Amino acid sequence: MVEKKQKSVRRVGIKIHPLYHPAEKALTAFRSACEKYGIEIIEPVDSSCHAVVSIGGDGTLLSAVHDAHPNDIPVWGINVGGLGYLTSSGTDNIESETERLANGDYHVEHRTMMEATIHHTNGDESKLIALNDIVIHRQVPAGGLMMLDAELDGRFLATFEADGLIISTPTGSTGYNLAAGGSILSPTLHGFILTPICAHSFSARSLIYDDTSTMVIKPKTKIPGEPAYATADGHDTAELKNCPDRLSRDIGGGCTITIKKAGRPAGLLRFDEVFFSDVLRDKLGWAKGSQNNNK
Image (cartoon, rainbow, N blue to C red; front, side, top):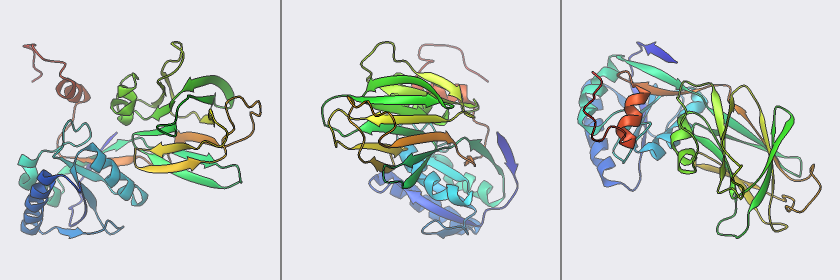
């Protein structure tokens, strides 16, 4: 969903790739443009910000979303990285788009978030939230596969023998999910996708399901006491302690991870309409050798 915005932005937070030199050059240009157009930069991000600006690649933008989401603040991504599926602006347009930011000439594209509630064996709970994906995985480089029981809307779905499971939003479908052989989902699709990581069986395939559903994962490890983990967007990780081993018949023991749609979407700040088909064609090189161009 795209929502038109008219509010002039006068205060922004900033998130910059810490180790990438071109990000420093882009930050210098952005600071200069902010000074020219009367925008204050706040560090670190707080609730007073009207927007958060990410300077880096998609990983930097995901980190910015984690900072911005609790206060419902949109994120503008300036790409100085590689592919940049999520970042919509390049460094050549920093000054002109900062002027548009100050004038309220932008819109916000809403993207579905997912949340995971981890029920620990001692009765505690912890939560993770993700724009891209929740990944449940074994300790690396420990040997052996996990067993992961999956329930969909309270009914047993399958047992996966794999290195782990990826549960992805449509936004995240072009990330780890795609690398693991999962399908690409349109960002406007109301669904999630579950993809096994290096499954032991050829019958273990990706599953696209409605995002109103609840997925529950119950992991078992190969070795008793071996730790497993749930990771959100490659950013936040929770250890799953005291998982039963995979030979255990106690299906009620150990940690469980409940994954569902988050209560509020993330907001990606855009200046022009972004066509998903154009992004795929350009980023994946689907048009090489073709003479057809969309006008």
